[in-house]
Image (cartoon, rainbow, N blue to C red; front, side, top):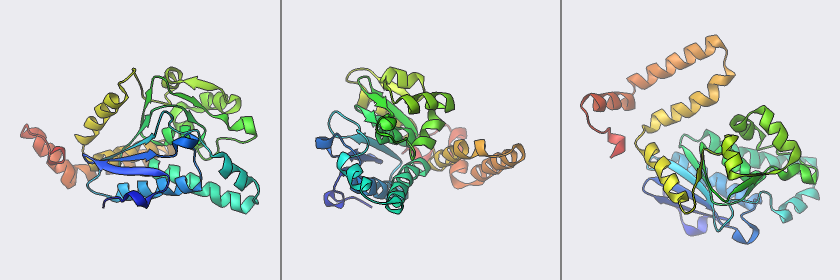
Length: 265
């Protein structure tokens, strides 16, 4: 499936060399979220996830900012509505993050600038985050009497409970280097090398088995929630399925024959 430019109002989507690129395209408001962008990103993720020709996704922002978080006008509109309307609206945001995190396709956040609030949630829901050296991050929700609710599960998984407590209650700004130390991002790119660092990760992903990548994502997500007896059986079952599946069979055969597996071609 391919995308048309008029399919989306707030993002740009293109597929290049088996990689789906989602670019938030509201630079006039620093790529801030509103209900339209949430729906657009979720739709794009679902379509890319179902496309067998797509092997990975990259999420980034147009211009010099990744995302400034919630759009002010959107927040104003929601503030005038009741609990149920706000609950349904927040569910859409939560499911968007979940769609990225649970996608069978590996995802990279190309953090080209500031990532604030929900923007940092996008970073956290991706599998890998590469940040420009000038990027910075903040969970600023408490400054306006809110909390990083829908993004919380993904941030806590990335940085842990202790650091999340500090960042959530202070709302302080952290640099790309600090985000790297906290495991919020996986790599900080030197000046002018952001695309180069993203390409390094993409090349690694494209030489890995797509079925195995999906299984690896599920392994990391599911095992911490399982008991000892459950994870012993869960992991043994996963290995048995992969060994006997077509991708595992091809990978093993390619290794023994000293050639690249078919998915690398």
